[in-house]
Image 1 (cartoon, helix red, strand yellow):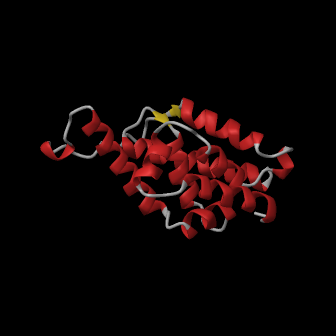
Image 2 (cartoon, one colour; image 1 turned 180 degrees about the vertical axis):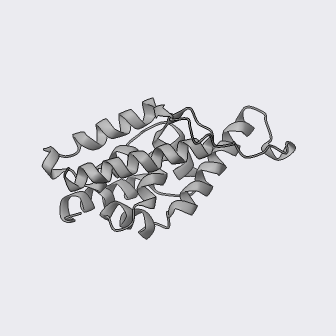
Image 3 (cartoon, helix red, strand yellow; image 1 turned 45 degrees about the vertical axis):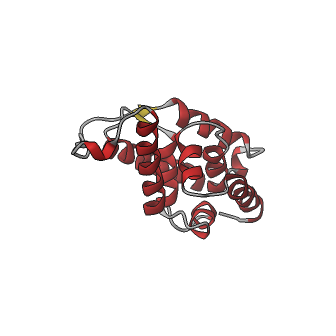
Length: 160
């Protein structure tokens, strides 16, 4: 397997672990973003951390987005003492629509598979116009367009 194959496998496995920890039935783009943030030593990781988005900050932004979405429906998370979802280590979440689209966009950002880099996958996640990830980034005060510009630059200029 090539380096990018190993990277994609690691991101998908970490994304699955994130989905399981959330009690989610599917690996979604938000889980891929958390997984990308957990993969140190890549240009994608550098782009995120340079913008203050380490794994913890992304998790907090996603939690804020969840609470915000509930409040838009008239539900206050603080009004309930809900336990964290219980992870089922035997369950394997499937690939959700948002992660499938993020992967497709990421692959489309590289001319050939041999040109594919972690920053392309990050771009695929960031390019979503709607959904959990753009809402979470907006609530966190992140300039998504600037983050995408930096990821595009990293995909072109960084070897890995």
